[in-house]
Amino acid sequence: MKRRILLTFLLQLVTCFATGAQSLPGKKISSAALLTDLAMIRSAVVALHPGLGRFEPRERFLHSLDSVKTVVAGADSTTFVSFFRMVNPVLARLRCGHTKFFAPMKEFPFYFFTDKLIPMIVRFDNSDRLLVTHSSYPQAVGKYVMHINGQSIESVLRALRPHMMVDGFVQSSADAQIQQYFSAWYADFIQGSTGSFSVGLTDGTETSTVIEMMGINVGAWQALNRKNSYLTGLNQLSFPSDTVARLRIANFYSSEGDKHFRHFLDSAFTEIGSRPVRQLIIDVRGNEGGNDALGKHLYAHIATKDFRYYDRIEVKVKRKKDVPDRGHVYLPRFLGLARLVIKKDSQGRLVFKKHQNFGTHHPRHGAYTGKVVFLMDGLSYSVTSEFLAVARDENRGVFMGEESGGTYQGDNSGTFAIYKLPSTGLDLGIPLGGYYSAVKPEPTPGRGILPDVTIKPSREDLLTGTDPANAFLVR
Image 1 (tube, helix red, strand yellow):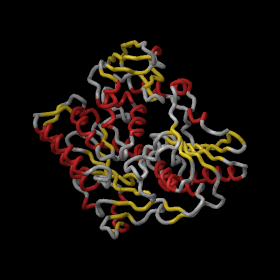
Image 2 (image 1 turned 60 degrees about the vertical axis):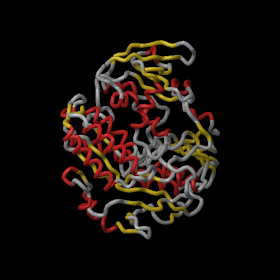
Image 3 (image 1 turned 90 degrees about the vertical axis):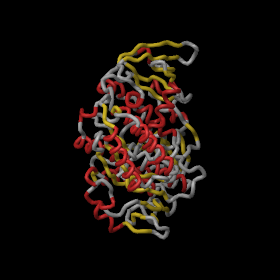
Image 4 (image 1 turned 120 degrees about the vertical axis):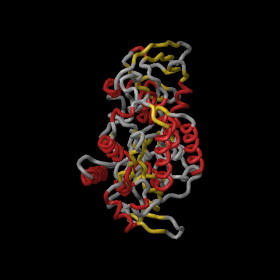
């Protein structure tokens, strides 16, 4: 189970578990109660999280958590929103994009002030400035954000980045998430109770303006956000020319099942093989994951020789009885059987021994062996980054776009333990498997797959819905 499937699962689970309106942002909770939740977070992460210490010394995480404990203990009570804002960046220090920390909510990730959201959709352009692409205030569209309620946009971004759950040290992933849900993150981590915003804007020259905006609700924000991407959300094959094939993989799953996805891939490569294709473009931008076996299936269609995919999957516990605070955690039913395939390896690590991505794999019959171009970005994550890592390790093609959202080394995912914290009703999702890709050691641990050719959208691309990759690709 990987990122997008996980997200759907967690949303359904949290809806069932959620305590709803009991945890309003301003509600005060006693220090004693919050310390109970902090103790549960600590014991759960230490006992279960396979990524604790993977990209950053575990002591830094534990020290940060202890600092929150000191602040909480020094007050009689703390508001719900303040507690959430203190704990979330500490969990982000695990440097694991699959770790989740949910507030009771209706619409992820809109937790607080959901009827007072900034009425803008924003995107980073190739100057790394934040551009307004859609707004209920038309005069704001096409302008860059300079400040919000007197706080510079640089300061806003510095405040938001530490809250983003990302793998390793991949800033492209943090920024991709920030622009994806900017209004929600601003409300979750910065905004006060006000529903009005004084937004300073510039057209890119010395000319600037300030627009007074009134907040909107989640539904209105989602309406603004529709059709705001040049990327299709569907898996599809096209032929820009007789010798070029373009394979869009928007996700690694199918609502009709894995067989349907595999059939799509098999049919696509059969058609590619029937044409004089000399260049294949595989576009995985915005692909946040799915079924990990399907990433390996795709690579087998372009492999030129035998390859390995996963090196190992590490876990922290073997039996359900080793899971702390069992009365407050949801565990998959099959977890009890996992002990049968969890063993210690020669280095004393607990490893999961059975997965179809282990071992040596062969290219598919009739695999495509021509030139490949990979298009990726900060949301190319989880299964997608695993696929890209193997392709990079095998020197299989040219990588274009932005640094991948997931790290070259692997990720923490698989199945999950979901805690319901007793005092706040917050939900903590902890991945139980540390996935390590079968790739050579990287020179800069904790980074994603780096592009050979960097491609970022220009202001004009974002405003017209033009794909910036088109200018770089052979037709």
